[in-house]
Amino acid sequence: MSGAAPPVGARARVALVLVSHSQRLAQGAVELSAQMAPGVLLLAAGGTDDGGLGTSYDRVSAAVEEALGVADGVVVLADLGSAVMTVESVLDMEDGYDGKVRLADAPFVEGAVAAAVTAHGGGDVSEVLASAEHAGGTFAVAAGGPEGDEPAAEAAAPADGAVRAVVTLRNPLGLHARPAAVLARLVAGFDASVAIDGVNGASVLELMKLGATGGQELTVTGAGPQASDAVRAVVEAVEGGFGEV
Amino acid sequence: MTLDVAWAARWTRLSAERIAAARDELTELDRQIGDGDHGENLDRGFRAVAVKLDGAAAGEQPPGQIGDVLKLVATTLMSSVGGASGPLYGTAYLRAAKVTGLAELDAHGVVALLEGALEGITARGKAQVGEKTMVDAWQPAVDAAEAAADAGASTADVLAAAAQAARAGAEATIPLVATKGRASYLGERSAGHQDPGATSTAILLEAARDAATA
Image 1 (cartoon, chains in turn orange, cyan):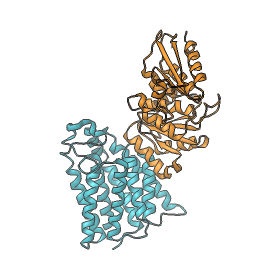
Image 2 (spheres, chains in turn orange, purple):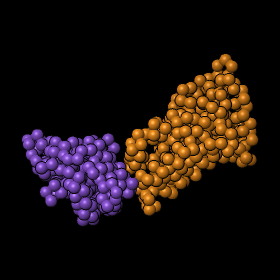
Image 3 (cartoon, rainbow over the protein chains, first blue to last red):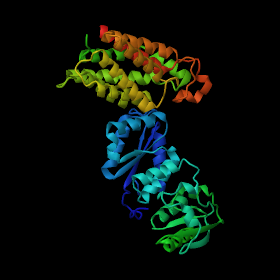
Image 4 (tube, rainbow over the protein chains, first blue to last red):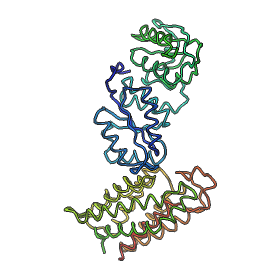
């Protein structure tokens, strides 16, 4: 991670534009991602100019311009063939906005959620893009987290100086979307590599994939300069029950 | 005889008329193997193009070159079509405009225009010949135009060769199985239907031909 999580109320460096054939689908994906990453500017560009099914060059272009007005970079996700082509056309016309705007080759919903959480954690354009694109894979640990360069597996096998803790999930629903996002954002804010039951603690999708339910024990391991603080914070968050107990 | 900006304007207006007339036919073809919006989308796009062209022609800086008209068509189609044919045709006209920023086109200039369009479509849609897409009309059109130009044909004859090859190419998509675009979801069931995108390509190139002899 190249920086700590932005303070509450601050904007992340990277904004997302979600492009769908359907205005409601785009808005729904924005709503879902916003719940997990409230500090990120998320813009929906769905439907045609008259609100029908399709994609609008002007809507996509306007959303990208608006996002660039407040963020350093923009990652765009699109749902189906012609939405992808419309985005590519916009980027073509503006010569890619000097690399500041990137289209992710990622599944729409999973990619948006993963990208939003990484952006919330302070990731730059390439980190947010990588996070979205990894969301299409198996969610395996090997895919790496938002950092992309430090396999979480290293943290799962404690070396010298590594920290380890075991904590029990108290909330009945376990690590569903919202708590997973809370943990991922928390972990992303530390200069440490944290694994929870062997998966990258900074990846909301990997955490959800654990399917951990209430009463289950989680093994938290950390490595790096802030490993102790990071593991302690995770343990406290889990013991706090995420406000659901 | 060379082609000038007046030809480009005639081609554009004729395209809008022909697409409007073929709207139901294109929609029916698309309903069989796609989502049934090709005729409606292209008609909406070309109506917008005609309005934009009229406005530009009456404005302070009317399009002075063929490339100016093509660029106007490109940006208007991209923002008004809605379906995949918007970015596909939009990019085709845009690339065609880039290679034809000239006041007048000779036979080889026409070939360059068509090559630019084909390049734009393949760059955007990533389709190849035989995948039951508009490329199956564009590629033979470019090949036929090139052969005609090399044989010393006039601009009108180069366009006639291109239009004829595009129409034959569109009809040859009937037995093909789609592997790109929405029709590919149908797999083997896409065979037996003519591709709507290849059909609209033939219509547009026939309009180009007729605008050159008008």
